[in-house]
Image (tube, rainbow, N blue to C red; front, side, top):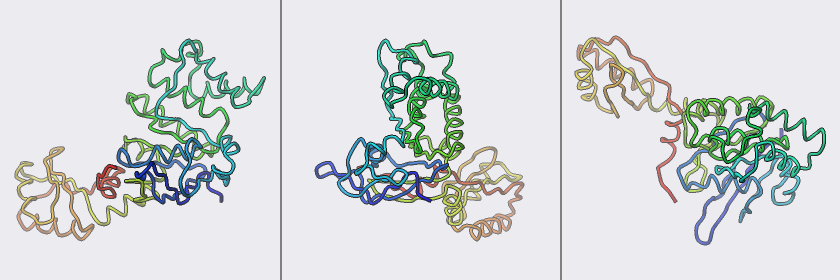
Length: 312
């Protein structure tokens, strides 16, 4: 199967500064891929190259099998790019905004009207059509920008920080829209610093730091891989949580233990073997445990374990 997006050996330099170096990954249709990394990691530069807005110094990007370097006009018909900054125009209503961009994509007559109507319904903008774009809330602006991005019915959607500045309800609604788009067989590359949101949304993740690939793959497999090496555990016992914390801290290899949720939460290296040793040691100390639960690690743990926090 030809990937909807294939980044192949991509390098981009600005003078002596290398923003992206030998970066390769792919995204299939129907897949939501989280694109994460520290500030300055090269995410926006990569997205701009994928969207034909910048040129690499080396490598290439393929959208549904077509090169962004050799066939940029054909590629633009297959992708939609939603930047992190919303471009609002004064004295322009939502209806005017969508009509302008629809005509820019070559839509005319009934086809234009049907396309706009479908996207207005999908993004729930029907009650906003006569409102000025500059008067919209952040959440409504993001919905409008997403509707504009969908006008050409792209195979690939590239979303740069779409949830930034949104309130919790707007983030949930945006997440559901993104999932619905994936259900329409769209490929989605989405960057965000809200890793808890990406963890609930994405099928896969690409982690970069200092312009280089750190990891790429299925989110569940990545978290399971980390969990085989390190566990997070919630303990409760028939003693005061502070007393339980003191007992836990006396054991070697325990990391980051703290009182939380009426018990003690701690990190422990060694996977299942480490867990077994801790239980055995606490029982020998006479600690009467009432709960010992291994907690599932999330995308934040993947990010922290695979990056060093370096900024270019």
